Length: 428
Image (tube, rainbow, N blue to C red; front, side, top):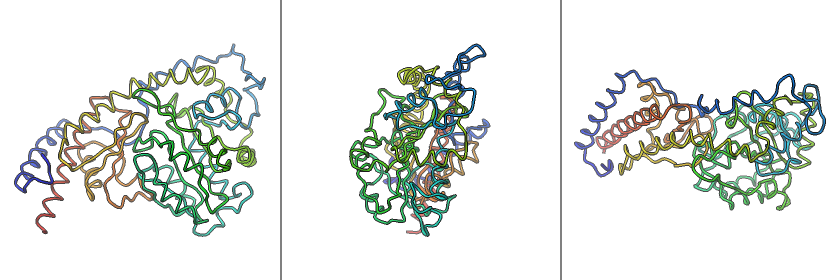
C-alpha cells in the first residue's frame, strides 16, 4: 500500500495491523542491539590461530633484524608496513604502523595540529573560528574528535558517489577550514564507495589554508561482502600527481580484520607529513607493540593472504545484510515512506524515514527491546535537521535476530509515520 495515496481510514486500519504485530514481538521479550558495528563472535574466531603464530621458540626479529621484544621502531616494522600499505593501495615508504586503533592515530594528528601546528604552521588552537568539514550522514566518532577540539563542524551532503564536491570546493576557500573527514570505501553509514572522479577532485583541491588536510579513513578498504572488492585510485599518488603531496593523511586498521581490541593500525602520507608526524610521536612513545605487528605479518604472510581471510568474513556478513534488505523490501514495498542504501561491503547501511520521524522511531524500537544508534548521531552534534537518518549495524546479531529487529524497525516506522500523516491531515 502506498501510504501517500491512501485515505485516512486505510491508514488507521494499517496502523492497527502494525500495532497487533508489534505487540506479539513485545510479548516475546525481545532484547537486541544493532547500535554498533562490532564483528560477531563467529568472525573473531577466524583469527584465533594468529595467537599460535608466536611462542617462546619463535625468532622474534623483524625482517630488518630489529628485536621486536625491545624498544625502538617508532614507525613500525617493515613487514607490517608492507601489509597495511598494500591493503590501502599505497606504498610502504608512505606508511607508519602503530597500535591497535586508527582512531587513536586520527586523534593524535588532530591534537598535533592543535598544539604544534601542521608542518610548522600556526597551531590550530590559535585559529579563532576554526572549522572542519563533515560529510553527512557520517561517522559519529570522527565528529566527536573535532567537536572535542572546538572546531565548528560544517555538514557537507553525501551524494551517491561521495561528498558534494561542488560544496567542498566552495567551502575550502575559507582559510579557517582546516580539514575534512572521509570514509572513501563502504562509507559509514551509507556504504557508498567514492567514485574515481570524486577521489581525483579531492586530490586536486586548492584550499585557502596551507594546513588544510583530508583525513582519509580507509577503514573498510578490503571489506567487501558481495563479490569483488571495490577499487578506488590511490589518494596519496593522486595528490602527488596533482602537486598536492601533503594534502592527505590516510588511515586503516585491522580492527574488523582480526581483533578490534588487539589489531594494528597505520597512517600513510607524504614524506613531509610523515617527518612532521614522527616529530611529535617520538614524545608519546618509544615504539608500538612490535610483537603484535610481527604476529599479524606472519599470520597473513602477504596482502593476498589477508584478502583470502576477508572472504571468510564476507561469507558471515552477506547473509546478515541480505536479511536486512529482504525484510525492508518485504515490509515497505511501494509504501513510499522509507528508503535505504544497499551497500556491497562495510559494516553499515543508512535507513531514512520521512522527515521528522527518526527520533520517535528509534525511541519506540528501544521501548520494544531493540536498540539502534541514536537518531541524529550520523550528523555533527547529534543533530539531523530533517530527523530522518538511522544507522543500521547488522554485523553482531544472528540472521534470525536481524530479521526480528528490522521487522520491529519497520513496524515502528509505519506507526510513527501514520501518526504524523494523520495529525497533519487533521491540521489541514
